[in-house]
Length: 225
Image (cartoon, rainbow, N blue to C red; front, side):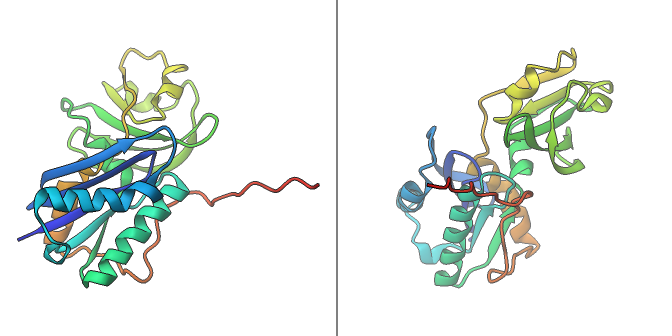
């Protein structure tokens, strides 16, 4: 039996799914406007296992969204995943957040998919995938401009998906741009990806694995009294 618990906390969507042989059997998630992962994540894990009638000891691996995304969200998800792996003695699988997000889009051959997550101001975390979800441009933190992605837009339809899409829609008027708004990464799309990694034993070193923050976390400087 291949029972993989998938955890997605890279954005405001607190999402947990159970994958059995790559198929999602239970999904529990909630996209609150505010981050509530610390309060809800472990409850959702228990809810998913209870609904699936699976005991924690029956899990074969834990999969976690590795980033990029929210520093705090990623840290909470990875900490929970590591804790479960240590306690249960099972391996850790990481799934790139933007890769999973790209799987929310099914499109025609010759087109491209650009998952993008909101960073700050006009900046987003993005990557580019072809219609078969093969990554063709590395993940970047980029400042959006009117001609961003123009080389791909000239080739055919480009599907932009994620919570950073509205920023680009405001400045991009290319007819080949298709905007899929109000969409966040989910543990649902992690199921098949995690199963594929499990089949080839593509595991992380639990002790040393860290989320892919892409950018250093910058804390605000307290005001002087």
